[in-house]
Image (cartoon, rainbow, N blue to C red):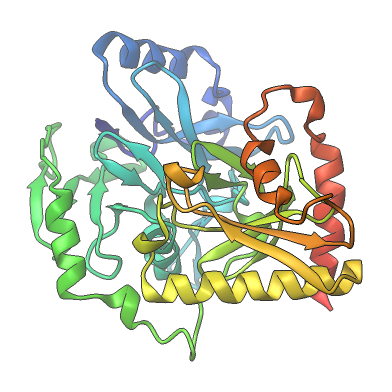
Length: 372
């Protein structure tokens, strides 16, 4: 996998030139990288290009793309933290004067080097982002505090009369040791292997995730700050998510078995319940209990089926919890619900699936239950 820095496309001498040269994601310039990815059979981290906006003629997005070896966009992130500083009598720099801030984070994406969380330049100054990345299961992002590898691609040399960069692109391990580093002033290449087993050993020696005092503090982001949530090989739109806890989320079902059939999933995708740590397990079942009680009150039911199919022989290959409000006589034989549940999502006839609009409306209704 090859990593390119922010502004890998160009560094313009003026704001007007920055806007003039901007392209859309499907433009000629990015498509050349897609072609190279296919030809060379490599993944690319395009660390920030000037993406033309459809809504503004005076500002662009600073957009980071991950492209796979087939030339497809695997994830797309628009830089959320813009560098605006005013020091009276000294300097004024306002990135927001020519850049539009993104409004969504992207979950870690599986790449050949591990689960990669994407950020851009100034983002690294905000430790909350690193904590969220680790919480979402990232293996590659930032060092020491998040116990991840960091890959920091950087520019070097003089771009124009107004702008120079100082290089030192580097790869750093979870201890903070620099594994590879580029030059400060001449174009160079750093090559490095990432040992994820070493990363796991660091996390075992310093189990910071387990030692966090979530009884005293929690790190939460708004439901819609993430555009999509991981669910096995699928992605759940944030509009279908109606509740978020520190480690879990609850969402409406594409094909419910009964009215109110919802799902709770850990943010960090795992195959088995045993793969969650103690804090994730506690949070999962606290979330299940809360959702079940809210739905029971909403539907005026007194009983629910709450179940986990833990493993492939049990019917699933990724961990999640089903919550099904029960009514008298909803099945001829009470335990029939388990056989229906086992096959309900394995039928491929899309005509039996609900529309996104229908699911969004249901999710909006449930969100109100948690806002009161």
